Image (cartoon, one colour):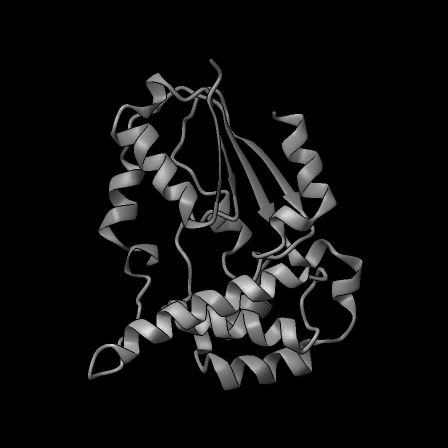
Length: 208
C-alpha cells in the first residue's frame, strides 16, 4: 500500500507530529502540506481570522473567487465558536497558542529527527495573482482595522507574501537538512481556496 497524506493548514502540523514524533514515517510514504503554518502564524485568535475571511468573501475582496461552500463552511465554523462561547458565562477567546512562532509545540516539532520521507509544500501567495494587483488595499485595510484591529496582522497582510492566514516564509519553514529535500511550490491562491484552485489541484495530481 502507498500512503500519501494531504493536509491543509493546521492539519499539516498534526500530520508532521504523527510522522516525526509518533513513528508515522514507518507507514506514510509522502506528506503534502497546503498552507501549513510550519513557522507559525501572526493571527492571535481563530475568531478574528475567520471573521476577517468571511468579511473578505462577502465584500468580494478575496484574491480567488470562492465557491459558495467556502463561505458556508466559514460561517458554520464561526457558529460553532459562538455557540461554545455562549454556553459559558464569559466570552471565551479561542487562542492559536500553538501557532505562535515561539510556542513550545513548534519548538518541539523543529527538533524532530529527519523522518526521511518526501515532503511536498504548496504555499499560497496572493501576490502572484495578477487580479490581486487591482487596488483593494484601501477596502481591505479598513476591513482589517474593523475586524482584526491588530497592527501586527495588518503589517503581515500588506508587508510580505502570504495566503492571508500564513506567510509564504512560514509555510516553507522546515528544519534542515532534510533528505530528500522538500518539494516546494508557490501558487496564486489564498488560505481557503487551495482545493478550489485549478493550479493547486494540478500540483496535487502531479504528486498523486
